[in-house]
Image (cartoon, rainbow, N blue to C red; front, side):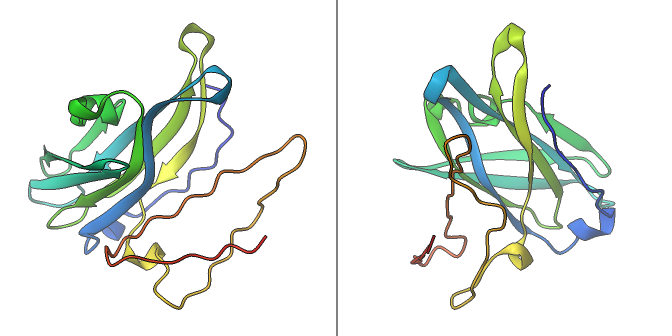
Length: 171
């Protein structure tokens, strides 16, 4: 791949108690300049008991739900998560993916542009827990954003709480 990323190690114990997590964006969609966006995910059950997880994809047009099971100490890789777990949504589909599990899982992913034989490029995508989210009234800062002739940036927002949210983004 042509990815230039830094992935920090996580302690297995970090999964415990995070029973409700989020991937801010997963996709299987065609983009500008002949790009083909896909998302691969990894799920690790670091616990001592097997557990299931319910995955809810919130996208334009509605929600899609799937489930997976993981044995204790098992890691599962899911390539092209949209076509693998949500085949009814295959096509141009992107949205936020919520992962609920009884004991918590370690989550990681990669969203990338698949150019077939020419390779891929993309970025690491960490799963986010409730401690990573902004609450009503919180002020967040996005560092390193740029918009120039040679650089552009996409920004998206997800309402993790489900109550509706307003966002202001001064530039």
